[in-house]
View 1 (tube, rainbow, N blue to C red):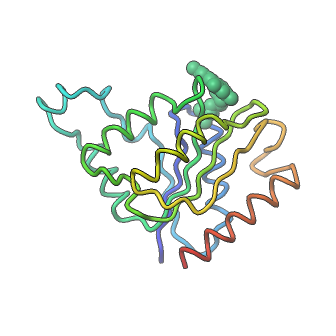
View 2 (cartoon, rainbow, N blue to C red):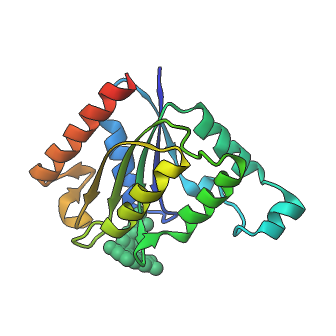
View 3 (cartoon, helix red, strand yellow):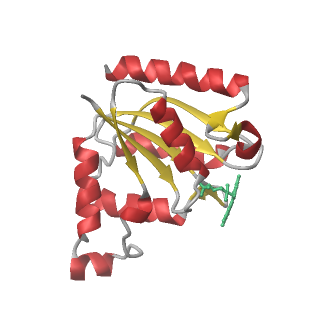
Length: 177
Ligand SMILES: Cc1cc2nc3c(=O)[nH]c(=O)nc-3n(C[C@H](O)[C@H](O)[C@H](O)COP(=O)(O)O)c2cc1C
C-alpha cells in the first residue's frame, strides 16, 4: 500500500494545519497515512556550528528516512508573519542538509490555513516558489481561509471549500495510484 505523509507546518498542540493535512489525508481512501507531528522530531535551532560539531540528531535522521520511504506528501503550512513557522523552517533546514531534494520528486498536495481571511496565502506563495527547487512535485495547492468558521468538529462546513479540496484530492489520488 502506498504511503502518504501528512504534515502540519507547526508545533502547536492544536495546530489547525495539522488538522487540515490529516483531514485531507482522510479523504484519500486506500493509502497508508503517516501523520507526522513535528513535536515528535524536535531539533536544535539550526546552526552550521552545531552541525559541524555534533552532526545530525537521531530525530533528523528518523524524519529523513520517513520522507525517503513515503510515496507522497500532504503538507499544510502555518503562516507566521507572512512566512513559514520557525518550527517548520528549522526542520526543513536540517532535512535539507541531509538531502537537498527534501521532497524527493514525489507528488505533493500543498495547503495552508490560518484563522484569517487570506488563509496563509503569503506562506503558500513562498512554498510554491521554493519547494520545486527542493524536489517538490506540487500537484495542487489551496489556501483554506478563516479556519474556525469553515472547519468545525472535524469537518469542512463550507461547501465551496469542501468541493475545492475534494477536486484536488481526486487529482492527487490519480497521480499517486
Ligand atoms: C508569531 C505569529 C505570527 C502570525 N502571523 C500570521 C500571519 O502572518 N498571517 C496569518 O494569517 N496568521 C498569522 N498568525 C496566526 C496563525 O495563522 C495562527 O496562530 C494559526 O493557528 C497557526 O497555525 P497552526 O494552528 O497550524 O499553528 C500568526 C501567529 C503567530 C503566533
